[in-house]
Amino acid sequence: RKFEDLKKELVISTYLQNEIISRIKVADKEVEAFYKINPSEFKNREEIRISQIVVPNEAKAQEILDKIKIRRDFGDLAVNYSTDRASAANKGDLGYFTYKRLPEEVRDEVIKLKVGEISKPYKMPVGYEIYKITDRRTVSFTFDQVKDSIRTQIFNDKFNNELANLLDGLKKNTTVQINESLLK
Image (cartoon, rainbow, N blue to C red; front, side, top):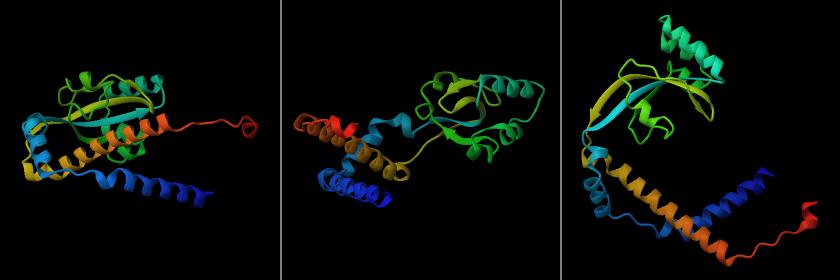
Protein backbone atom coordinates (compact mmCIF):
# COMPACT_ATOMS: atom_id res chain seq x y z
CA ARG A 1 0.00 0.00 0.00
CA LYS A 2 2.88 2.35 0.83
CA PHE A 3 4.40 1.57 -2.56
CA GLU A 4 1.12 2.48 -4.26
CA ASP A 5 0.95 5.72 -2.27
CA LEU A 6 4.52 6.56 -3.28
CA LYS A 7 3.67 5.91 -6.91
CA LYS A 8 0.68 8.27 -6.66
CA GLU A 9 2.84 10.95 -5.05
CA LEU A 10 5.44 10.55 -7.78
CA VAL A 11 2.81 10.87 -10.50
CA ILE A 12 1.37 14.00 -8.84
CA SER A 13 4.82 15.48 -8.32
CA THR A 14 5.78 14.83 -11.95
CA TYR A 15 2.48 16.32 -13.14
CA LEU A 16 3.00 19.45 -11.04
CA GLN A 17 6.61 19.69 -12.25
CA ASN A 18 5.48 19.55 -15.88
CA GLU A 19 2.35 21.69 -15.54
CA ILE A 20 3.42 24.36 -13.07
CA ILE A 21 6.94 24.37 -11.67
CA SER A 22 8.76 24.33 -14.99
CA ARG A 23 6.79 27.41 -16.13
CA ILE A 24 7.42 29.56 -13.06
CA LYS A 25 10.28 31.99 -13.38
CA VAL A 26 11.34 34.60 -10.84
CA ALA A 27 13.32 37.42 -12.42
CA ASP A 28 16.01 39.30 -10.52
CA LYS A 29 14.02 42.50 -11.09
CA GLU A 30 11.03 40.99 -9.27
CA VAL A 31 13.21 40.13 -6.28
CA GLU A 32 14.70 43.63 -6.16
CA ALA A 33 11.27 45.23 -6.53
CA PHE A 34 9.87 43.15 -3.66
CA TYR A 35 12.77 44.27 -1.45
CA LYS A 36 12.18 47.92 -2.32
CA ILE A 37 8.38 47.78 -2.03
CA ASN A 38 8.44 46.10 1.41
CA PRO A 39 11.00 48.04 3.44
CA SER A 40 9.29 47.29 6.76
CA GLU A 41 10.10 43.59 6.31
CA PHE A 42 13.81 44.20 5.86
CA LYS A 43 14.82 47.50 7.46
CA ASN A 44 14.37 48.36 11.13
CA ARG A 45 12.18 45.29 11.56
CA GLU A 46 10.98 44.73 15.10
CA GLU A 47 11.31 41.18 16.41
CA ILE A 48 10.48 39.61 19.73
CA ARG A 49 12.03 36.47 21.19
CA ILE A 50 9.41 34.17 22.65
CA SER A 51 9.43 31.25 25.02
CA GLN A 52 6.32 29.14 25.49
CA ILE A 53 4.75 26.54 27.69
CA VAL A 54 2.01 24.37 26.17
CA VAL A 55 -0.35 22.48 28.46
CA PRO A 56 -3.42 20.37 27.67
CA ASN A 57 -6.09 22.30 29.57
CA GLU A 58 -7.03 25.56 31.26
CA ALA A 59 -6.60 24.20 34.78
CA LYS A 60 -3.01 23.19 34.07
CA ALA A 61 -2.40 26.62 32.50
CA GLN A 62 -3.63 28.31 35.68
CA GLU A 63 -1.40 26.03 37.75
CA ILE A 64 1.61 27.13 35.67
CA LEU A 65 0.69 30.81 36.10
CA ASP A 66 0.41 30.27 39.87
CA LYS A 67 3.91 28.73 39.92
CA ILE A 68 5.26 31.70 37.93
CA LYS A 69 3.73 34.09 40.51
CA ILE A 70 5.77 32.43 43.25
CA ARG A 71 8.89 33.12 41.17
CA ARG A 72 9.40 29.70 39.59
CA ASP A 73 11.67 29.86 36.54
CA PHE A 74 9.74 29.90 33.24
CA GLY A 75 12.38 27.78 31.48
CA ASP A 76 12.32 25.11 34.19
CA LEU A 77 8.53 25.02 34.08
CA ALA A 78 8.67 24.60 30.29
CA VAL A 79 11.09 21.68 30.63
CA ASN A 80 8.96 19.95 33.26
CA TYR A 81 5.40 20.68 32.14
CA SER A 82 5.21 21.70 28.46
CA THR A 83 3.67 19.15 26.12
CA ASP A 84 5.60 20.70 23.21
CA ARG A 85 8.73 18.62 23.64
CA ALA A 86 10.70 20.45 20.93
CA SER A 87 10.48 23.84 22.65
CA ALA A 88 10.62 22.28 26.13
CA ALA A 89 14.08 20.91 25.31
CA ASN A 90 15.17 24.55 24.85
CA LYS A 91 13.49 25.77 28.05
CA GLY A 92 10.52 26.91 25.97
CA ASP A 93 12.56 29.09 23.59
CA LEU A 94 11.03 29.45 20.13
CA GLY A 95 13.38 32.12 18.77
CA TYR A 96 12.56 35.46 17.19
CA PHE A 97 9.24 36.40 15.59
CA THR A 98 7.96 39.36 13.65
CA TYR A 99 4.37 40.52 14.01
CA LYS A 100 3.38 38.70 10.81
CA ARG A 101 4.92 35.39 11.90
CA LEU A 102 2.94 35.27 15.15
CA PRO A 103 -0.33 33.30 15.11
CA GLU A 104 -3.20 35.61 14.15
CA GLU A 105 -5.17 34.76 17.28
CA VAL A 106 -2.50 36.15 19.61
CA ARG A 107 -0.32 38.57 17.61
CA ASP A 108 -2.01 41.83 18.61
CA GLU A 109 -1.68 41.11 22.33
CA VAL A 110 1.66 39.30 22.39
CA ILE A 111 3.53 41.92 20.36
CA LYS A 112 2.65 44.53 23.03
CA LEU A 113 4.26 42.58 25.90
CA LYS A 114 7.50 43.94 27.34
CA VAL A 115 10.65 41.90 27.88
CA GLY A 116 10.10 39.63 30.88
CA GLU A 117 6.30 39.82 30.73
CA ILE A 118 4.19 36.67 30.57
CA SER A 119 0.96 36.36 28.63
CA LYS A 120 -2.33 34.96 29.72
CA PRO A 121 -3.05 31.40 28.50
CA TYR A 122 -4.34 31.24 24.91
CA LYS A 123 -6.50 28.38 23.67
CA MET A 124 -4.76 27.03 20.59
CA PRO A 125 -5.26 23.84 18.52
CA VAL A 126 -2.59 21.93 20.48
CA GLY A 127 -3.68 23.09 23.95
CA TYR A 128 -3.24 26.20 26.07
CA GLU A 129 -0.14 28.26 25.33
CA ILE A 130 1.57 30.70 27.69
CA TYR A 131 4.21 33.03 26.24
CA LYS A 132 7.10 34.91 27.78
CA ILE A 133 8.94 37.67 25.92
CA THR A 134 12.66 37.18 26.52
CA ASP A 135 14.12 39.77 24.14
CA ARG A 136 13.13 42.51 21.74
CA ARG A 137 15.32 43.76 18.92
CA THR A 138 15.31 45.79 15.74
CA VAL A 139 17.16 44.29 12.78
CA SER A 140 17.90 45.31 9.23
CA PHE A 141 18.87 43.07 6.34
CA THR A 142 20.77 43.99 3.21
CA PHE A 143 19.45 42.88 -0.15
CA ASP A 144 22.20 40.27 -0.48
CA GLN A 145 21.24 38.75 2.88
CA VAL A 146 17.60 38.19 1.90
CA LYS A 147 17.49 37.86 -1.88
CA ASP A 148 17.34 34.04 -1.80
CA SER A 149 14.50 33.98 0.72
CA ILE A 150 12.62 36.65 -1.28
CA ARG A 151 13.06 34.59 -4.45
CA THR A 152 11.68 31.54 -2.63
CA GLN A 153 8.73 33.51 -1.28
CA ILE A 154 7.85 34.90 -4.72
CA PHE A 155 8.21 31.43 -6.26
CA ASN A 156 5.92 29.91 -3.60
CA ASP A 157 3.32 32.66 -4.14
CA LYS A 158 3.36 32.07 -7.89
CA PHE A 159 3.19 28.30 -7.40
CA ASN A 160 0.19 28.58 -5.07
CA ASN A 161 -1.62 30.86 -7.54
CA GLU A 162 -0.90 28.53 -10.46
CA LEU A 163 -1.97 25.50 -8.44
CA ALA A 164 -5.23 27.19 -7.47
CA ASN A 165 -5.87 28.07 -11.12
CA LEU A 166 -5.08 24.52 -12.21
CA LEU A 167 -7.42 23.04 -9.60
CA ASP A 168 -10.20 25.47 -10.55
CA GLY A 169 -9.79 24.49 -14.19
CA LEU A 170 -9.84 20.80 -13.35
CA LYS A 171 -12.98 21.24 -11.26
CA LYS A 172 -14.75 23.05 -14.11
CA ASN A 173 -13.73 20.59 -16.80
CA THR A 174 -14.00 17.32 -14.88
CA THR A 175 -17.18 15.42 -14.21
CA VAL A 176 -17.19 13.37 -11.03
CA GLN A 177 -19.54 10.45 -10.70
CA ILE A 178 -20.10 8.65 -7.45
CA ASN A 179 -20.53 4.90 -7.69
CA GLU A 180 -22.87 4.22 -4.77
CA SER A 181 -22.44 0.45 -5.04
CA LEU A 182 -18.69 0.74 -4.37
CA LEU A 183 -19.29 2.94 -1.35
CA LYS A 184 -21.36 0.24 0.32
